[in-house]
Amino acid sequence: MLKSLTVWNFALLEHVQIEFDAGLNILTGETGAGKSILIDALGAILGHRISTDAIRTGCDWLRVEAVFTLDGQPALQELLQSQAIDVSEDVLIVTRQVARAGRNMVLVNGCHVTLAVLKQIGMLLVDIHGQNQNLALLKEASQYDLLDRENPSIGQALAAYRKAYAAWTERKQAYAKKEMDAREYAQRVDMLRWQNQEIEDAQLKEGEDDALEEEIRKLSHAEKIADYVKESYDLLDSDARNSLAVLSALSQIKKNLEDMSRFDASLANAQKIVDEAFVSLQEAAYEIRDYGEAMDFSPQRLDQLQRRMDTIDKLCKKYGATLADVLAYQQKVQAELASIENYDDDMEKLKASIREAEQEVHTCAERLTALRRQGAAILTEEIAGQLKSLGMPHAAFAIEIAAAGQFGPRGADLVQMTFSANEGEAPKPLAKVASGGELSRIALAIKAVSASRDRSVPSMVFDEIDTGIGGRTAQMVAERIALVAKYKQVLCITHLPQIASMADVHLYIAKHAQEGHTVTEVIRLTEAQEVNEIARMASGSDVSAASLDNAREMLSHARSRKQHLR
Image 1 (tube, one colour):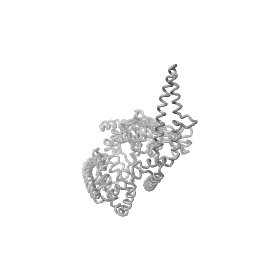
Image 2: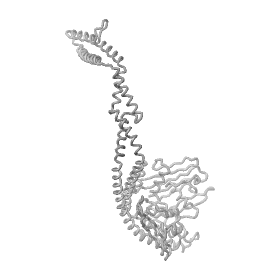
Image 3: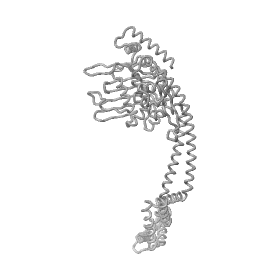
Image 4: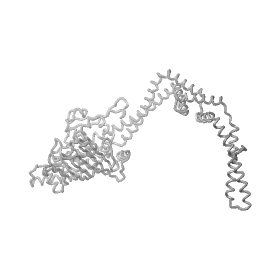
């Protein structure tokens, strides 16, 4: 629900802050005071496009900020979470700023978002009902959506149908692709068999390339390795003339410390360390000696390993960067060969799978059609009843369901609204017969019927709903708007006292000159001020005692009607 709207430097609005309540919030005022500008400012918060022309004369920027409370709304919560927007306090603060220099900004709870994301969020916050929205009723998608939201069961049936339809479509596409691929199979199978045989002949083993590289590196440096081994062993344990091997020296140290310990045990720890070092170095000497004696350098073996490595490198250049990639490619080739060789069996299985999926689609479509027919009958009766209350006693309205003759993303139905304003005339498609005024009343009738069912958008704006109506029809329109306000927060701009008298909150938009500039302010009317405003709206600027009495009577009647509606 919209809690507040604050506007800076937007057209005539220098700085305006408005607090809204639940129920029906009415906005009235003299023509040109800026009522529609407030709706435009709210539209900016909802992602509507605005240009720098909207910036107040003499200013460099405009800013609009709105505060919403979140009342459940799982679809909105999911969208906000997907954008990493924190809503832990169940409050949403949306700020939009437009600057002449082009530095524009959109913030949602302090997070920067794109205009496209803001528009998605806005669609789940406020529904603006104006002339453009009336025209949306003529679109096929809108008529489907109205019907499919009539009952949760229809939405569930539609979801089940779409799942079955997607599976059926996917299998048909797989069949068509396999059928098309079959034309290339003859040529491709020869290539696949040749590739598989080439890899098979190499008799590759996983990890073989690493082992080969290690052995080639060793054999390629065999002479150096032999020299290192001999020198290391000689230094550890050798009787070479004029040199003292490490073990020989350590042995002498060991003996000296043993002899000394008979007279002084102070170096007992050092003696222990020397003993351990001697054993460790002796083991190292034996290992080095054995390694050197076991060395067997074979030029033939090196040549054999290098040829094997060349074979692997050649395959890697063709089929993958590593040996593992080559083996993975071979598995892919073998799987494709198996698929080609089992073509006939696979096609039969796919056909059977398609038939099974089509039967599921058919079953889901029949259930969806049945539920839609039930929903269409209920909506037709309720909307037709609302139209009669809106001053169209002879109107005929229906939501017709016809067979589409094929399955589609929305089912197997053709959904169409038909309408006739006059008695004796056959109903025809809405787009062909409804005038602008009739379309406006049809849209209002639909909103009045669907308000209790559709809780996805908590706030609604009625802009120019009263164009071209008056008298009894105006009273009926006022009651329908009040009925919608029973289920949703409603903001309504009106020039009609019948509608204004239904207000739960009455806001007056006033305009005056100040220091050479036009300034607009918004006043929340007291009960007495509301009586004066209703009187002004009904009789003009000359408010008399009689017009004030009439205004009080209108307000009293409105309260009684609201009590009855709610």
